[in-house]
Structure formats: C-alpha cells, structure tokens
Length: 323
Image (cartoon, rainbow, N blue to C red; front, side):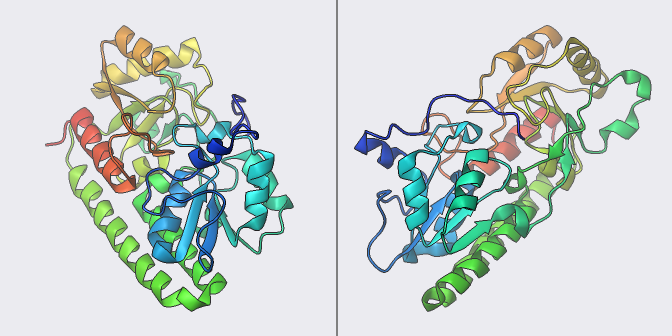
C-alpha cells in the first residue's frame, strides 16, 4: 500500500468552508470540524469506515469529524496544517494504519492521548491479484500474473472482522471516556449484532451460486471473498491505479470464459475505464461493487455502510448467478 496517487491537496488551508467538507457526510453526528459541544468526546477519524464506527458506538456522547472529504479517494489524502491541529486537539483519533501514509505520519507525531489503530484490533493478511480458493482449481500453465501483495487493509468489507474492530473501538472509548462507558458498551453490542446479521445475510445469499469467481478493478474484496467461499480476481492488485499487463488481461479473459464469469466490477471513487475496456473485449457486463471508502450522494448505492453492503450482496448474487 505504499505506492499511491498524489492528487489535489485534501483541503485548501485558506478556505474556512473546506473544513466543513472534511466532516462525515453520511453519519448522524455531522458537526463542525472545529469541535463539538463542550463535554463531548472529540474523535477524529481517518476516513468513512472509521468515522461510521465512531458515530455508531459513540452516539450522542461523541463529536466525530473525518479527515477524508466525502468523495475523495482515501489513499489520495495529504494532511493539511489545519487537520494536523485538529488531530492534536482531539480526545481520540481512530485510523487504519498503512492505508493512508499521511495519516500514519501525523498520528505518530501527535500528542493525542488516545490513538486507536483499527488494524491492531483484528487480523490482517497478504492479498494480491487473486484471493480465495480459485488458484488450486487451475493448472499452473494458466499463466496468471500474480502479485505477492502486501497486508490488505480492507478489513471493514468483512462484517466479521469489522465487528472485531467495533468491539475494540468500544473498549477504547470506554477507557478514554469512562463517564459514558455504559452507553458505549450498549452501542457496541447493538452494532455487533447488526454486523452479525449482515454476515448471516451474506452467508445465506452466496451459499448457492452458479460460479464463485468475480473480477474487480483492484483487490479490495479479498477478506469478503475468503469469508464467503468466493474468489476475487483483481485487475490491478492492491493498487487501484496500477495498469494491468497484457498477460494479465489475457489471463483474465481466459479465466472468465472457463469459470462462467459474467461481470467485471468497478468502484465508485475510481475510474471505470479499465473495467469497461476489459469487459468490452471479453463480452462481459460491468457493475459497481463498492469498497465503501466513502459515501457520496448520487454515486453510492446507499446512505450508510449497511445499505451499501446489502447493495454489494445483491450485485454479487446477480453476477455469480445466485440460485
């Protein structure tokens, strides 16, 4: 995850309105980045999946702001001076190490008392272009162009791992803000219960499908694939902007035909050009599989994590031929 794009700065430091854009647009506690009401627990989250957890667990007792603007690809984030100050003033920062290098650097240098690294609250694995049990079904002569990959940070797309992170965040909130520990414990339990129910929906919905293989633009869905017995074939590995080799494209076309793949998935915050080109050449359809790195009105297929995950489930059922 070290090779990432360098696009526009996250915020223009001279524009006061830009701070409003950095707050979480899709969670209930949408408040000014300058801080919440006196007495609230001030949490700075790195991007949407972390902010969503903080909102769900903290409820009315927390003020949550996100360092990543709605619609901004999280890996592009470069921390501004104002955001650095906001982190320093926070009661807690909730982030996912190795996803956003500028966030990691800012958090490491800060004096914020409570630093919560979501990656430390569950297990991470190495994922590359191909994730799942599909490799064993093909002869080595299939000439797949694999990447060795790095530690995959996309843990929130697996409801089970996301629930583990939620439990860890809840305990951290309880310790940092003991006056509201009972509320945090209750809210965490409710969130975990919803995630358990979502896991069951995925298990049931993907148990009987025509094929178990799906193609995505980059390897964001490895944990989800492993959880539900699927195989993700990614065009560009863990880096959504890397270009696939000619050999990789040919291998994907051959695999799609052999395994009855019908769809190439692309995502909301990254260009769909490569996906549509490969799909067109191979006679396949395209559809959205959202990695839920941000919620954007008019683009995201839902208003929050749960709605988008259910839309993802439906998209997978259609593409895989759910029976």
